[in-house]
Length: 157
Image 1 (spheres, rainbow, N blue to C red):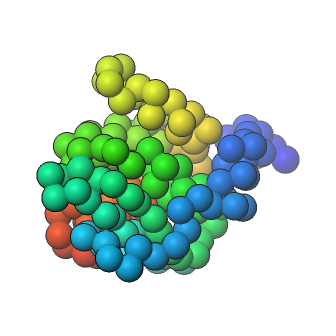
Image 2 (image 1 turned 90 degrees about the horizontal axis):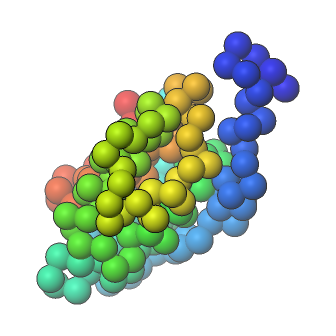
């Protein structure tokens, strides 16, 4: 399938299909310390993110519930995997870098301690060519920032 942006089937790599079809950490954490809801009104994606912390500003567990397209679910699934063990500062830094990468296809400041985690998001490298899908992929990250900020609500609009 080809269009103006090239072969859109490239957007559906095996990792995206796997995590989108069988999301990891798709559950509620009943005793979560932080939580937020995210909404992408344009696409209908909705998630609730739950974080369990150690009291020292480090994420011990991360999970989500919700519904959405394959890209939204795959992003939330991958995000919850890489957040475990991260400090709040590392989680925010990772969020900024992943969102930049997804929106532009580039991440000029991605080397360093989080590089291995960022490489997990390589399947979204070309998603910037489909701007409507960028909001799907970044929804989980906006929701993470809302949870860390204590605002409890996020939108990818």
